[in-house]
View 1 (cartoon, each protein chain N blue to C red):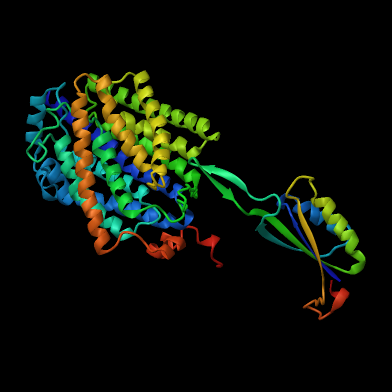
View 2 (cartoon, each protein chain N blue to C red; view 1 turned 30 degrees about the vertical axis):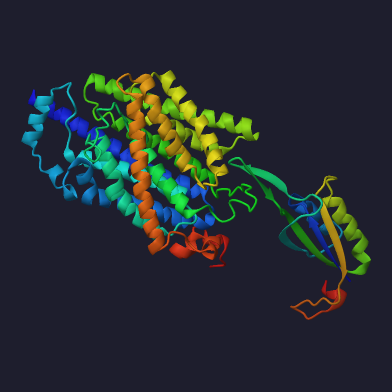
Amino acid sequence: MKLVSAVVKPFKLDDVREALSDIGVQGITVTEVKGFGRQKGHTELYRGAEYVVDFLPKVKIEVAVPDSLLDQVLEAVTKAARTGKIGDGKVFVTNLEQVIRIRTGEIGENAI
Amino acid sequence: MEQIFELQYALDTFYFLVCGALVMWMAAGFAMLEAGLVRSKNTTEILTKNVALFAISCTMFMICGYQIMYEGGWFVSEALKGDTASALAAKLEAGFDGDAVYSKASDFFFQVVFVATAMSIVSGAVAERMKLWAFLAFAVVMTGFIYPMEGSWTWNGQPVFGLFSLGDAGFADFAGSGIVHLAGATAALSGVLFLGPRKGKYGVNGERRAIPGANLPLATLGTFILWMGWFGFNGGSVLKTSDMSSANSVALVFLNTNAAAAAGALGALAVARIRFGKSDLTMLLNGALAGLVAITAGPDTPTPLQASLIGLAGGIIVVFSILGLDALRIDDPVGAISVHGVVGLFGLLVVPLTNPEVKMTGQLLGAVTIFGWVFVTSGIVWFALKKTMGIRVSEEEEYAGMDVFDCGMEAYPEFTRQGS
């Protein structure tokens, strides 16, 4: 099992969610986050003095997937979140040791 | 015939009261403007300050300010002694076209809201770092003594410490560019010098940092409220509306006040767009207020075109003044020292151009007298407060916000608290 964490532009959240449900993903976790990458921040102006907004708002989408579905998920996320401009975000994939569904006590891929 | 005089008395009293109520409403304008231009963590405190300073101003001016300024008696006792018969006699003497005669109580009411305006100017400049109770202690002295003293030398025509008379020198300040606005800004400047800039406003290498205001819709609303209140401020200062020439004068004052505000706004907007490449709303708001302050010393003599030019110049001056004070590391979050002080001085000095009865030397002497008196006396008070109770909150408290430190509550608790 893998945990896919995708940091994407906030306005792309709906597209990513739809693309994931189209390929059968049944649950995601979304967090509003701030950060910077190569895009860096941007400057704004107030009463003649510039100030830098260091951290830009993004959303982080976390999806737990069985190994068999990983490639499809990665393709769906990258395709849906891409604008081609700087600041589109990143996808991180990590191994997932265990998953438990709290209600039934199921474990492993059955719990996803 | 006597009944017509009574009617005239009643009309001028009524006009005075309505204008006074308009000026009272400027307190709301200052509160909203300042609440909009500070950070959200300092909102409750600035609102508390604005309401409390208004209350202190009204109370102190009633207790002793009106006596010091106009010999109206401690607790306004003298002012209310006149009976209807003596008022009517005064009206008969003045005649239909003569100087206005109105209820003494309405005079107190109109004067007291001006005191509150002068004091409101101070609160914005020292925002976000001054202890609430140190500020309120200053307000007691400012509205009970400092302002009434300079008011007695100007509008009441008393000689300055018995030495010289500003009126004889050709000084005139119609509605108070100097007496109210320059005075308030001078007390603010003195306070800021003792207080220092907000933490984080200037970097170690002297770079200027922006500390954006939390709520520009509130700042805009506040500016419009002030703009509206100013019709009472300048219009009421005609003192009479009940004969044709007075009514014409009132109408011209309204027209000129509005024209100057509009031109001031445009001037500041244009300068900001050219200097920064962006249309800075806060500068536009300061520009409208600068136009109003600039015309306040003499709204009754310029033509509408001249009034517009005076307002335009005020709006241009205010942007450069704000940038200049910032370069000097005089941190004024709302631009009060520039709007009311620098442009207030400009307003005084421009009066002789349209009013031949006013002398430039008189205006300079008046400006120096007001500035010198307020700067020195308020400096003494700030210094004494600094040595006793302290005027500045600690760094940690400043970081956490004045709201939690001084008031124990936040303006927007749902942003930071979980609750049900």
